[in-house]
Amino acid sequence: MMYLQQRNYWNHVSLSFAAVGDENGLFILSANKRVWLGSNKQADVFMTEVIIESNINKGEFTLKGYPYKIIAY
Image (cartoon, rainbow, N blue to C red; front, top):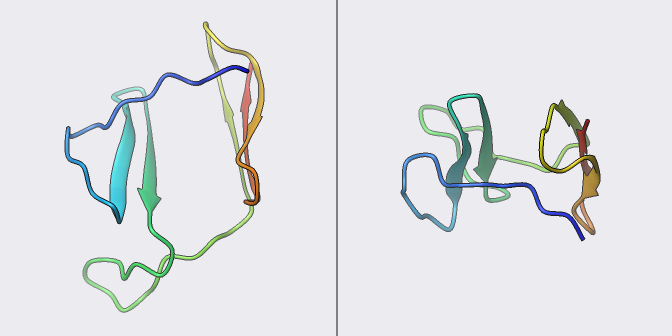
C-alpha cells in the first residue's frame, strides 16, 4: 500500500476542519454538514478527482466509500 505524505498545515487539530499540505499544495478538509464560516452553506460530499505530481509515490489513491480519487504521476 502506498501513502501520500501529509501534514496539518497550521499544526491545528480539529474534528471538523483541517488544512492538509504545504506551500506547494493544500487540501481543505471539512466534516460533512459543517457550516462554512461567513455563510449558511453546509459542507457535502461531491465526486472529486485531483491530479498531482509526485517524486515519491505514483498511482491512484481512493478512499473507500467516498467518490474521491487522487492520481499521482
